[in-house]
Image (cartoon, rainbow, N blue to C red; front, side, top):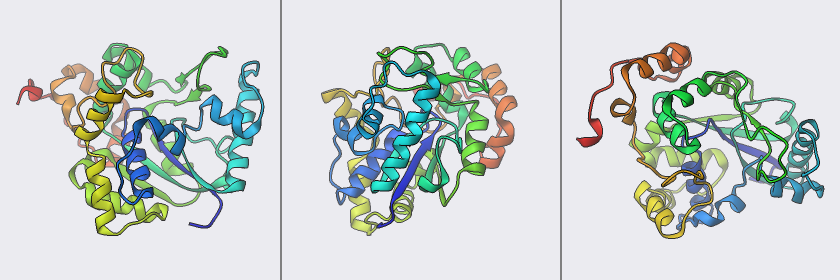
Length: 285
């Protein structure tokens, strides 16, 4: 890949973005094991203040939200002009923040919102009901506020449905859509698609090494041994279950129904069956 610009590694939170970035980091290293503590440097979060300040060479603590937004846009243009890079993104797509002329393409990761809700609740330290409400809020923004002690600038997520729609319909350039569930079921095939899309080593041996280096148990063991900076302040662990369909043993029937009611159109578009009745005690099986 010789072109300059940015690949956005985008998703709604708790959809598998960290896992995909681990795969990318391993593929870049010919399938070598990844180091979780170095992930933020290898594939930065596009909203992290220290990364933005390094590019723009401006302290961010006294900037208001509009100035921080302008700072982000300038940093992305500078990054895109110097080399080709990859940035993690949790914002909904916005052409005034992620400009077409700085974009090489997007890897967008999706996950069944019924599995996102309990995982997102755990990460935020709230109950599932609160997570469901936030996932339907068109104005929902993480990191809102002016505190200079926040490590990240604010990020407008919007609702889960609008987040998905914005990246699938509005983002410029080529787009690779990855389903969390398919990545679990067919990791070699999906990792090869990822490598080919990003112009990374895609031979079968390299892909197999990367998949093995980034399997769920390996990443969980790394977190248990060394910790992980992306773990929420109230979380016991970042890598919780690594399963598809765990919502069946977690959500109440009315919670699953409400998520389908709120997001059924986009769920159907992505191929998520709108079955509503949780299967009790699945986690014990």
